[in-house]
Image (cartoon, rainbow, N blue to C red; front, side):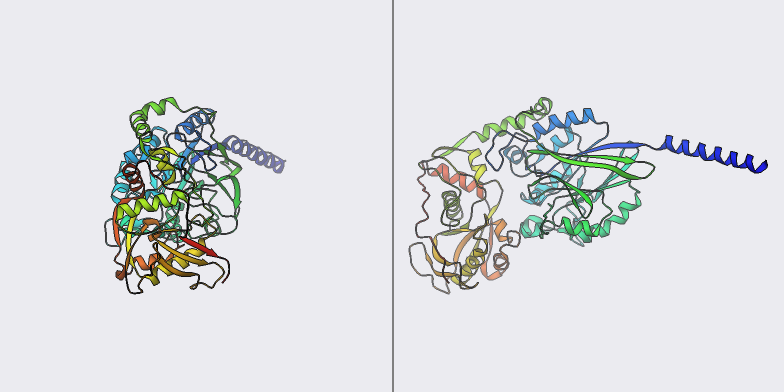
Amino acid sequence: MKCIVNRLRLALVLGILIVASSVAARHVPIVIIHTTDLHGHVWPARDYDGTENIGGLLRCATLIAEWREKHPNVLLVDMGDLYQGAIESYLTRGLIMNRALAWLDYDAWVLGNHEFDWGLDILATAVNDSSVPVLGANVGGRPGAPNPLSRVRPYVIRQVDGVRIALVGLTTDAIPTWSRPHLLGDVIIEDSVAALRRILPAVRAERPDIMVLLAHQGYRPFGDSPANQINRIARHFPEFDLILGGHSHQPVDQTYVNGILYSQAGYYGIWLGKVRLVYDTVARRIIEETAEAVHIDEQIEMNAALLEALEPDLMRARELANQQVGELTHGLTARSSTPGQSGVQQLICRAIAAAAGVDVVLHGRLADESLTAGPVYRHDVWRIVPYENTIGVLQLTAGELQEILDENVDQIQRSQFIGVHGIQYELHEAAEAGNRIRNLRLADGSAIHPRRRIGVALNSYVLASGGMRFPAVRRLADDPLTRLDMTDIETRAAVITYLQRNRPLAVEDNASAVLRVRASN
């Protein structure tokens, strides 16, 4: 009888514990909204297919407000390249984006590579102004020197309905291959995996329930690149529950990388990312997860309250964008049957030659955008020159020029192929590397003396190697014999000045004899 009573008591205790456990167990729904590669676009933007009046942070803000109204537990984050690329942000040196993110109550944003385009002083000012935490676990200072970006943090912890969420930020490793040293100063960009190994013990010590990586890097299904290492990161750190990416301007609803959910929100606010998680507080794991990248078209209204908050700067930017700066007698296309020698490329090269006082320019197109005949406005120039590159001049021999042009042949089928101005040559595509450039001469057909050095202008992106596409350019730029003169001439400003001084401008889509491509070896 006593044994039966004890069994009944035990069953009663176990029953109470089970009931208590079931009462304590909760399924917590969490929504993470994410943007990336806004590039300063508060106003609606134009996509790469030419569709106008879509995206932009003002439209995203409307949907963000709707989702917050619908979902009780929301985090809002951005994956970088926040500042550079649109007039409204350029005029305020990024501060309008800080105000917009603060108004929208973002939880964190990550430094992107284009944050460095205006130089370290301007970036440090903007980062110090940001009331939203700025993340970058692999961004640090040179040993022994003050860290100019000391406010950039590796991670933050956010608590949502009792669930602790670690937001770890990471930028792309390849920044030094796009930005010349004068733009980076004493900032060091650490290898992604090494940086995460260093900081994750501190993150784990915070005992987060969910770990999210916010990366200014994009997922490449066919393998990583130096700039985009999502596969490598996912293999080394499977403890991440979610990776949100950027940089590559690709919208990705959802995919899995080494079992980790991955999503990416495209560019210019033309997509808004939404991840839905359900966390079980007893099982201490995510039991449901879905993600999508929602297209932000003209059916979504701009947020009137945010527009009012930013109105003075936005109106000033719109007035400037609509200023006429020149006139063209002929339309100029971005592409040409002769690689790298389109009308848009010729316009950019002529402008750089005039601004830098050189005869030879190596420069390609920066965007797949054309110009029509007639008035040219500032916003048109922003379309063909979306980046704030500056101009550097190298003193090169004919042999060094030939080495650069030979290296350039590897890009002939890509948008990165560099066009030329002030010289002419034959390109033998099928020949062996080192023998693909022949009959290199000045534009008038005269030979270049092998020991003569001539001034050649290139932009800062290519001088930094263009993401390791042009290592010979980087090596020559670092060689004291070439006497690199890194000017403060911005490419876009040079084009605007050239249009203003040559009005109307008669530049045609005519590559003539600048480059002759030979298929034979």
